[in-house]
View 1: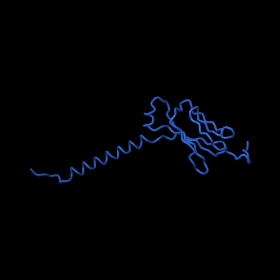
View 2: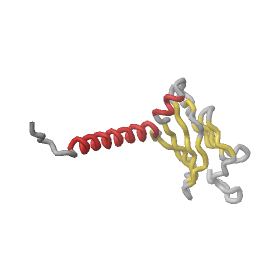
View 3: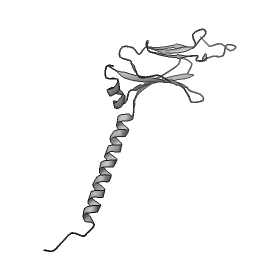
View 4: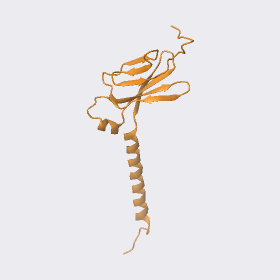
Amino acid sequence: MLNTHPQGSDDAGSRTLWMVLALGLAAVVWYASKPVFKGSETSPMNVYRVEFYDASPIQRILHYKMKTPSFVRLYRIQPETLLGESEVVDLWMNGTLHWWTDPPAHAVVVGSSVVFENIPAECPAAAGCPR
């Protein structure tokens, strides 16, 4: 009986299959670990920005009791600086944003679950904010 297949063809096909499976697994892990950007809001004087994210599929599994597992990031716009990131919280019917950056509060509050404290006022005290 004649062997019509070259010697290394089974090894090359097997190697290709394993590479495709490894790339597919890497893509699934990447997708499962990425949060989904849902939107952003800018402070009244355009000094700060709050970004809202839905939790990644892995975080949703870990926080299965939450209806809308999400987290929030607070940025200073100029220069672009991340000031804080919340834990995963349930923002279902709990996502009202309050900009309390004036003294004495110095805070940005999202719902009843997220509080960013010690946030500098949007306008320097000497200049004052236009109202």
